[in-house]
Length: 199
Length: 199
Image (tube, rainbow over all chains, first blue to last red; front, side, top):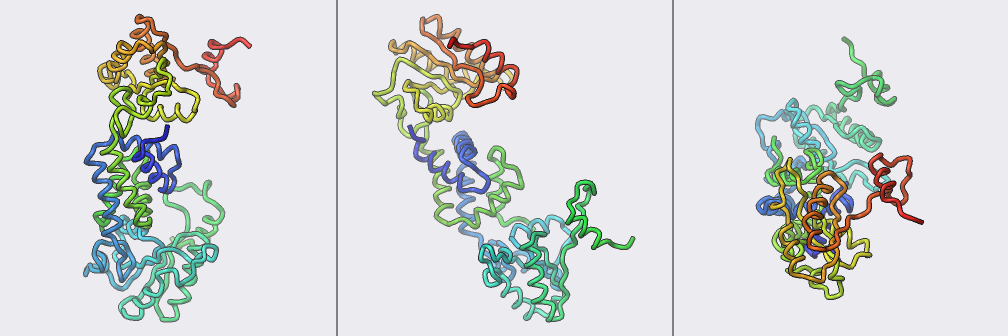
């Protein structure tokens, strides 16, 4: 006996999501059968409208319903700073901190020779155009991840932007707040020592 | 800044699934944005049709597109045996073993005084009716889980069915095939000793 067809298709769809294997997909599909009908409909609608209604902001590359995005449109943001992140979701993480009031730029990835991702595959050209057009920007904060690819991308951007006389900064690396030195890895400790500040 | 509305709704929908927390829901929602448009549409369609097209078989209670279900309709199944399981998904697990050719009955749960689940809340009445109507059934195999609730439900069913002169059996409990005695828990070992078979 096979799974009833709609269920088999749903299991297949769940399995396409990252981190969800066959057994979990089956569990989720059977759970869906027991869900409230409205909840299932809302879920299906949200899937379709996420794909249909969201686009990338033509200025910063962030995900948005309206172009330009909420942040690029907001007259109260500090237009002298652009914070560069790898992915749209990093923008939300920064926003949840509620302490950064400048603008953003989303690269949609990092330089990765292994995956064949060069500067042309990233949203870099539009960043350079923004800097050329907009003289009020005096600092570019690079917030790529602390991975080898993220570091390489940060270095590449810094070499590209610095000659134009714009300050380029990088997020501090060091110990997480609340963490034990005992459990920190060597590289983090090294960066924490190197980046030590005067008290 | 808030998440764009379709994304916020999608995160909320993902979070309603079991075992998916806030961070995972965010990750899945952003992953959805990057998915192929057809895949997203198929996912949404599968969700809706799983909910709309599937119903419970009026005979055995299994999930099906057509009533009665494929197994109840199949003239080649052994109609002298009914295997009783807790959930529809357990039917598929049994079917994948490919060694049982009898019929099924799905209880849709187990007796659980804590959750207020008594015999009326389970699909038991229709099982008794099946046994009364169908004189060819000579064995009911109870395959509820090896949990306290599953055991109690098995005991309850056995007391209900046995007086009618029908053989009631329970799945064997013992060591998993391929497992080490060293790692077996006390209860499993006890059941393995108690249920030992002659060689």
